[in-house]
Image (spheres, rainbow over the protein chains, first blue to last red):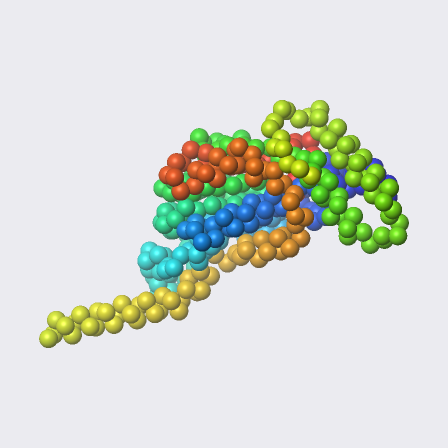
Length: 240
Length: 93
């Protein structure tokens, strides 16, 4: 196994166009982080009156992922955890049934319903890859989230995305945003390599010294690549 | 007598309404949005390499964001995580 080639596989090619959903070959993916956070929040929520809702943006689904359907999907998850459907929502549904062209709820209605539903209990919302949301939808969505947060102060929103949307997020959700940069830590890289080596389809080509070299050399090389670009940040002490 | 009759009718209506709502529960949920992000979540869950990114949950920023939930504070209600500009495009995908 050529180390350079594997390294390239691990961190990808910067010039690669983003739309392709590359499922393998990245150490730390935004959807990996989002699903991890969602699961941990769900673990903690068990037995407590806390709601957790998640959403994954996808370039390939930009058209369907409108602010109304996206926030509606969050609302659906929050409501499904409530013992009873809030009166306001049941009523809106009944009214819709009587209209001949019965469309889905409109954005303004969803925002109101989300304000009501998230006020019933503390709610965590995880949004993955916000940069993949169509630009024309994104600002509208962020403003709608801001409206929800204004009325529902017990709600927490976790968002991942590429750095170019940071300014937009901070502007639309003014005064509410804390930002963290995600970089793969050495133990992430080692864990990732171990997992991939375990899936090796040609185990005969691998011996323990090559394995040891891979686990030593690649994390070291990648760490060196990050040093120049890394601003000082707190790296928690976690054992590999 | 007629008052009690009307009361009974009302409570019957309430029961019928509640029953209707219970029966419509999945219809109402489906009406709220055609999208099902939980399916995507389950898909990712099954393929995730365990323990990657766990450190994020130990950061002070995450803890502060998390602890704020339910305490009625709206400051720092949003935690935005972004990938490194140098490699972000692909590794953070």
